[in-house]
Image (tube, rainbow, N blue to C red; front, side, top):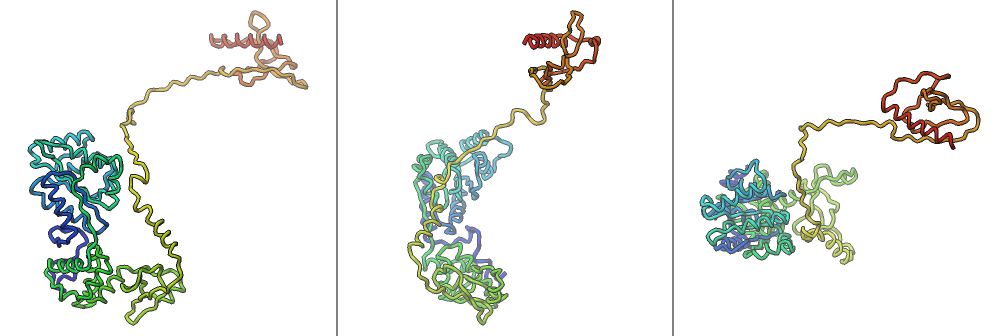
Length: 452
């Protein structure tokens, strides 16, 4: 957008790693030299540790470009790998090998077969970015893969890059063998004041610009103070300063331009309170403060200036107990510096294939009903006369049916089938073998009841 206005060939300050536009910095160069020596001499594993935005991903891309013609390179830039199968698939994909429709064992055998053959050349360089989020079991899998040796030389060289918590995780007893294999460590840090100015000048020179014409000397001081020397923040701030200068038609960026860009990046949304909105104004911006102000504890009241933009005055000094500040800081950052392995134990879930497929036919079920399973008759003497009719054993050998007297009633609770007989001696229905057995049980039951 602003390249032609400032006479630049391309955007000098990019938000993504660009190895072809790399500007050397002392921290990155020191780590790059140590890791390159370890890779060339097959010494062991390499680790890069640094805060966010200091160039870990850029360093991985630089190593990949440096050794791409020497050996095969697998750069895994995403830490979203939760299983060994996903890790092996990512490696095979980076090497251009088939990886679909294969189980974990098949993927591992395919990778080992490829690295053990002549097709792999001088082996593989495995670069793992964002390694601090990998589970411990995947780090152990990487160690096992690095054990592959042929002709006295390792077939896999490994470099891990991550946040400072990565080095703390190596203190886990489960990674003791992994920690012993680390032979090269690179530590990235923020740039110093002079290194920040050289970094900005180098980016502008790569884009074909003239640093002394685009940025004033006092602008470099404000860039370092606003970004704290973090390369990612330097790129964001300088790119936004060029954009605002282009919108305002300014050919040169001074300290005020950096202040404006920094305030624009750090602006807060307008509060919803009606009283505060009327005090500030509808189009005014609420900012964190100026570069000369100390770190503000809370936003204070603001008033619009002549340009239409609002700047916040430093908050009035308050009597604050320093012990409370220390306690707040410790409680805020307590979890940030705790190793991932100590937060909670890692649990690995393994899901097997179902034994019965949903489409398979299930065996037919046969339902058997026992109507006489809960036969339980009790006797009780009840007041009053109540005529109850139930099945009674025949009085004669011919199997006649009769009625129970009103004084001795038989409870039908729990009985399977109770049939009421009419008056007289009707002819019993034709009975099957099961019914005859049931009637025999009834006869024995009534015999016991009469005897009592």
